Image 1 (cartoon, rainbow, N blue to C red):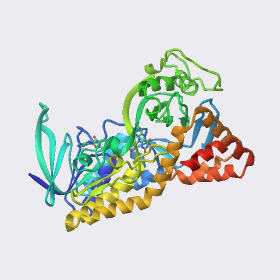
Image 2 (image 1 turned 90 degrees about the horizontal axis):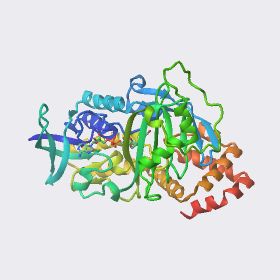
Image 3 (image 1 turned 180 degrees about the vertical axis):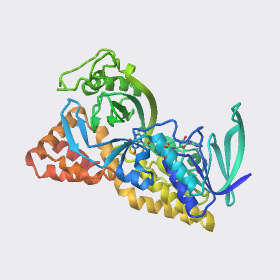
Image 4 (image 1 turned 180 degrees about the horizontal axis):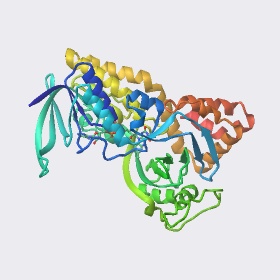
Amino acid sequence: MAHYDVVVAGGGPAGCMAAKYAALSGARTLILEEHAEIGSPVQCAGLISRRALHESGIHPQRCIVSDIRGFTAYSPSLIDIHADYNGAVVIRRDFFDRELAMSAVRAGADIMTHAKVVAVKRERTVSVLKVKTLKDRATSEPHFTEIRAKVVVGADGAGSIVARYSGLESGSERSNLLKCVQVECAYDTSENAEIFVSSRIAPGFFAWAVPAGNLVARIGLCADTRISPDRSPFDLLESLFRHPVVSKRISCIEGSRGNKINKINKISRNSQNTKKTNAWRKVFALNAGVIPVARNLKFPTFSTEKGVLLVGDAAAQVKPVSGGGVFYSIKCGKIAGEKAAEAALSGDMSYLAEYERSWMHMLGREISFGLRIHKLRCRLGDHDFDAIFSALKHADVMDAVKEGDMDFPSGVLIRILREILRHPKLLKSLAKIISMYAKL
Ligand SMILES: Cc1cc2nc3c(=O)[nH]c(=O)nc-3n(C[C@H](O)[C@H](O)[C@H](O)COP(=O)(O)OP(=O)(O)OC[C@H]3O[C@@H](n4cnc5c(N)ncnc54)[C@H](O)[C@@H]3O)c2cc1C
């Protein structure tokens, strides 16, 4: 039976970073990834901060597909607001994850793909992981093996098996699992990421169009389906395709019959195209997934008794405002790897508690603030969002975004709020929403 100091379940950004730093700290480390390849299938828009890319240690040229120059957001009735912002890039997540895995291997970690953790049990000071793998890759015949570890890192996503077998909250116990669906398709892109707020398209969250290279975008949505349980994400995607901005940007790619791209001159505010959309003809890839927005921050992300810690989506380390999880996975993955190695090499499991103190110190306040904003967002109607957009447009506060930080969005939101408080007329128009927020 193979024996490691640290075994990491899951080869996403959180798992690869944890493995890299566990190996760099001197621990014999193994990553177990259930899929045949690291980085596939992709379930991500790939929009991350330049800082996240820098902290990952990956060379930008290896994975950037677009540089972002700003954000344009549309309210339900198409009031648009724009903010310049040059701190973001769009990456190819499959390349990114593979580069992260390679850097873990270069640091000394081993990787096993086609290796799904199906159970974990603790035997005194060692965990035994039951792993479903392949007896023979040529025939795909399943085979079960056991691997021993002094410390197990659960980086196995929102439905973490490691969490479940360790008595820690997993899946919908720990988080609200927001449903997402996304396509990659032909699109008349600019260098702006677009955001669409509307209860018809993305109840409780928002939809996006993120440039992913020349005339290609990732268009998707995330929805809190508790708000409109009768509508599936695919149904909502059809509504997104019909959104006036999205449908024009898709339909103005006219193909190869000598037509050039028609630039959009004006988006009609009244355009309500209810015909069945032809957008599917321009789609190259479709994926669906979940974003785990924490229910609260009270659930532990470690167990000293079981020699386990959780990181990334498994620990609901996601920005509740935007759903972004890559930056937090990288930051928390590094701490998780270092603390897991210290615990495994010393035999002192109290290092696992240090992991939680450390990441909570870094992100706890930010996530708590984001959870309040998400709660508020779920209670607002389309007319409330229109009022907010119209206030932001008139208050000319979008410069706050330019100087803001997408990894710590609370700073921007607080600055915008302060700006609004200085305008009595705006304050009056948003009084109801501000008082709703205060009561949360
Ligand atoms: C549609 C969509 C768009 C998104 N867009 C963005 C974005 O633009 N920017 C951003 O920052 N974030 C985005 N996110 C969130 C981001 O993708 C996640 O937060 C991030 O991938 C979390 O990293 P992770 O390593 O914790 O989990 P994952 O990336 O999910 O990796 C978990 C890994 O564990 C493996 N695994 C699972 N179970 C087992 C098991 N039992 N045994 C072995 N292996 C297992 C999985 O195969 C997977 O490889 C998006 C999410 C979705 C769904």
